[in-house]
Image 1: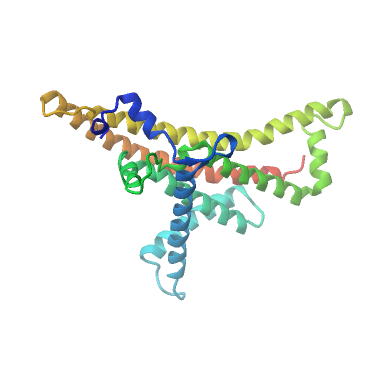
Image 2: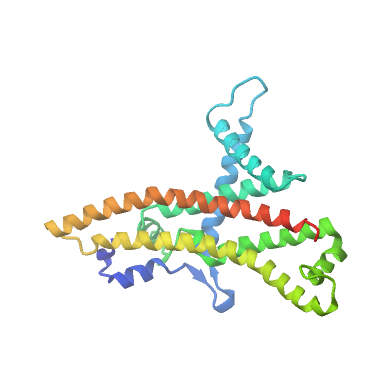
Length: 272
């Protein structure tokens, strides 16, 4: 608890918002974000691999883990099929990876707020944030990959010349006087996509993490008194209700980050 370290509420929150990092300035690396996102990616990959390996010969009804993995795959495949009408094999794999990975990362917010720091402290780390999606560096990195895929799919569908031609002729037409406005609007439109993707996920998860910290402060300085007991019980009730509601946010934000790249890629292939 915060009171164990004699911290004020401000110090408690500031401490929990600091990253385990190395380097300075632009070349600062958040070790906790890199470590947790990598470990969770490996865990999700192993989970899906084991589920896929349990596939049996035709004729047997799927059960257990295989059934659960197939449900996730079919759900994502249907969502991609509704948005993208070309060969969707790669995009289904992309959507499946994004959805399951982001759900796993977002779910770290449901761990007891002080537990990750205490575990990290056993290894000599003073700071450790366990929620990768509450780090803007992490969400921007994912969004940049999506941006590259948007450009790749657009070039594949239209060719380099056709893609560059659209930058100067859409949406206002091929009038040379409108080339600069067209180009400026297309730059804004393209950059707005990764920015909105990264900021939406980061903002929601950061706010959720911060609210868990505020709830934890209800029992700060807890003593064996009626008032202290009431605050402690209030913390348990508020934390439980927020955790249940937060599960919806965890899934919703993963779904949004999964489906919007498919929408953007589908739009990128359209000819104007």
